[in-house]
Length: 264
Image (tube, rainbow, N blue to C red; front, side, top):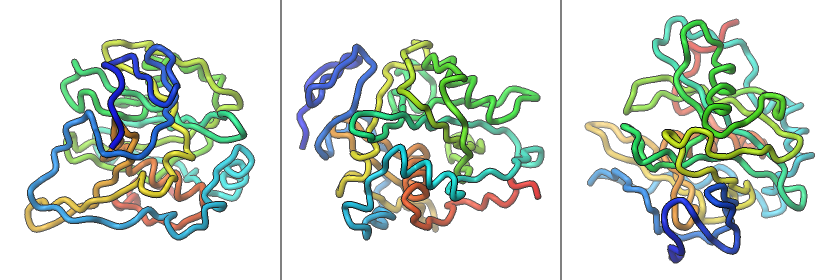
């Protein structure tokens, strides 16, 4: 189990620290700071979709994700949300790190927020009236972490998810940056910390795990990524699972039916 080495907001793990804008480089542990609302009835879930790949095939680089995206790894069909009620979107920003590796930008939600306080998530939020969902994701990323729209290219989106807590559909868009964008805590009321999470860490054996949580007569798969002192879990982890599997060309079916979203 990893040791917790600092207080809130100024993390130092494995030698990386940039005043609440932090590069994650940790060994797997299970010492999550977040409270996980695990029910009494739960069972272990499926292994990581990429578990069967040899270690060399699990490396994602700038060149490899470019090939995957060009080959159609992401959804690009027009989205129609007229009949699905309230909607939101988030932005998974993939940026180059050292040694041609990649990282994704994740935020820690402020502990003052009414829902999901202190949890790790992708930048994003609710759609404004008349706003395209891709513009929602870009606007929220600008408001939360200061991302400049010109620093990224939106390459497509992942399977939409509907959260149990809000009932709101969320569309995860994927953007690629040519260089690591300059991000910071642009909205302290919403964001407590900005993290640069290396994809190579998320793909390490033992970092991803899944549980099935019993809810009434049914059970649902809940995804997790271990960051040592933290855990990415729930909808955000499900989105990252979908993203990594697509970039590795591993087939993963949607966890919820996205048929109502795609306009043909």
